[in-house]
Image (cartoon, rainbow, N blue to C red; front, side, top):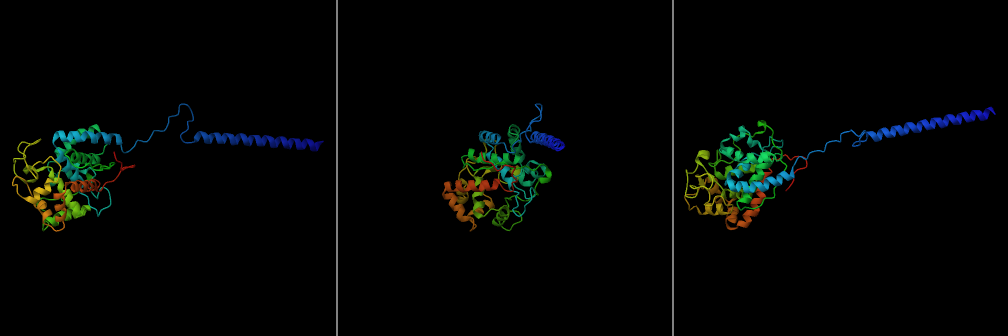
Length: 328
């Protein structure tokens, strides 16, 4: 009899231990479930915030659409293109660190870079784009400058450029490039105009064909004496504007994007148009001339090749945001 009682006690003890272990296991499991990320402990728990996207495609699309009309209404296509080119044109393909490598990073908005000699007058372009930046604050300065340039080309009758967006901005003046990196009309310290433009554009990673096709963007715009010291006060093509009056243009219809630049430079027959050494050389240098001849004869080929080279220029030195590049 005592053996049966002893066995009964052991069974009861085992059952109680088993029950306790199960209860502890259940409590432990419930604790884990309650700690699972994203689940609420109580009704009053605050859900985790949703991550904000670094690139706002809706604002990018809105800005591009508005910029085309805005730029055309202000007759400011040339200076907007110049702003973007000069921001990107500091790129040095031998350097790898951002922003030391230069390029399309928005640094031109800071005074140390804006004050470079070749950037004279570009404060006008920055002022023109200031309302757009205020309206579309999620669009970086670097994106806005390059987007505006592409919009200006298209609005003037040029090709639509397959642009990408999501460029990071430099955040302060420490990101500014040194002076002397942009093309100089009188070819700087180089022996010849050809040497000079190759030195500048090769540093950015461009070849002869790309140099010539990008030169064709001078179909738009003028030189002004108060900025470059070149040209005359006004010509029959510029004395009435449109937009601001005066200056000397490369082409008669200097707000229309076409291949007339190549024809004018080749013919050299209109003394009211400017032709600089760095223009003339594209029909004199044996590496440049075949491309200049091609684009003078074939506007469709010029448009096609220009769009590719312009896109490349717009992405020089770029540091992309997370999730970028994007298209619109």
